[in-house]
Length: 352
Image (cartoon, rainbow, N blue to C red; front, side, top):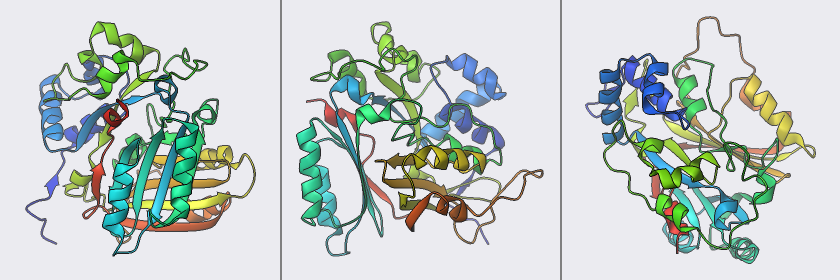
């Protein structure tokens, strides 16, 4: 098949740079470059190109407890074609909506609620049908996002998907949960009543043209304490709307695979996580309320051949693995090409 003029093949160096950045923490840029094995000049050139093409996007994510967020909702809804635009408009207006995707079949929303009452009000809204037919509604107390097994153990962490895409099995920082204090110092902090000014300035920060000073290195010294103590986390995401026209080793990401189900037993999330990790299955989103589970992963399409290392062992079919832990499973493949993000990691919307 002739490659589309709009499709670009990534080089091995570019793929390595993406992996390096997606797995990055608070280390300096020089350390990241050295660890990648890519020559400094090549690394910086590739990084500028990847950001300018929209494949990589920087954000600061707040620790919910540090900005007074007691509950977070994850909604996967299937509105009718006639009501899809109305559902998107309704969710856009819900206070605290920080993520909103609209596809050909489903709508995904993530809402940070400023109070328990707001969270309960949102649940009542769902029962009215204003947001379509809910396939999954996960609402978690942020207190449940602490401890060994968070109720949101994977929060838009694309490193695992990219590592598999490149035919590797090793990750550096995956999985990153919703609440991810770097040294545990905020693990017992009482929730704030409003967004502190030092955090607000990070959430509203405009990321300009990337350079060797972008990321944590660009944060003023007075605000780096927020990063060190886990009140705010610097993260890099894949720009999904720019992903399906990139090819590497003959593959392209073609869809987002959403999966919903009910846990077969109490405490089953920990066992599900362990089995997923053992099978090299790494969703970029995984949320649970101790009963229901919502999972999302990137797919290379039903007809594509997955790349795997030569010495890789045969894998158990993923759906069989998941079925050991979940019942009432529903799986939806949403094509990437028509997927739209009316709200994409807009944590600045939490700053009044």
